[in-house]
Length: 162
Image (cartoon, rainbow, N blue to C red; front, side):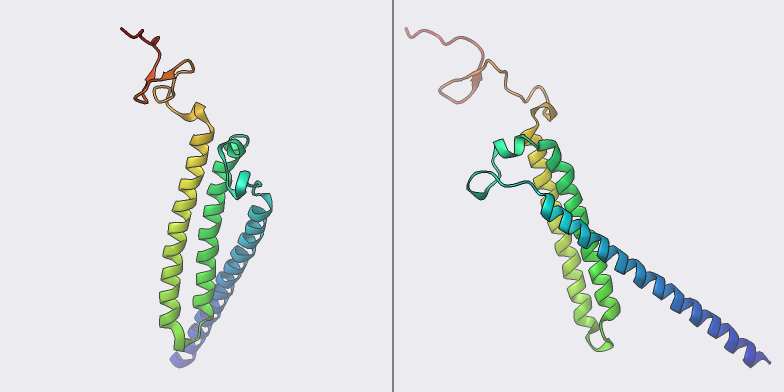
């Protein structure tokens, strides 16, 4: 009788394990689908570049408050997409290639972290460069200042030559 009870308990655990794995794979699939749609939205909504194919101050300044959250969300999207893709890869890889898949997953996650930091820095640069109100008043040059020959700002009138 004890052998039958142990077998029934093992079957219940195996069934729970299969259900849990199905839910986990389903969540990874949903994450991949959501990030694919978000990537498409990022590609379609990204503003047109300025002169010569680069973003200039005038092209960023008009929509400066748009760049920071947009690029930050794009960076988060790539990290989530890479993690979901790596998990899917590790679930699907055969037993024979698990070492290479694990190494590739580690490099992909590391690369997505560097990418996210770079895009976050780009977003911050655009936000502060295009929004002078975000700068500390002490760092903003006065509107009536003139540059001296040494390059320093001066608000005093120029001196007459002796």
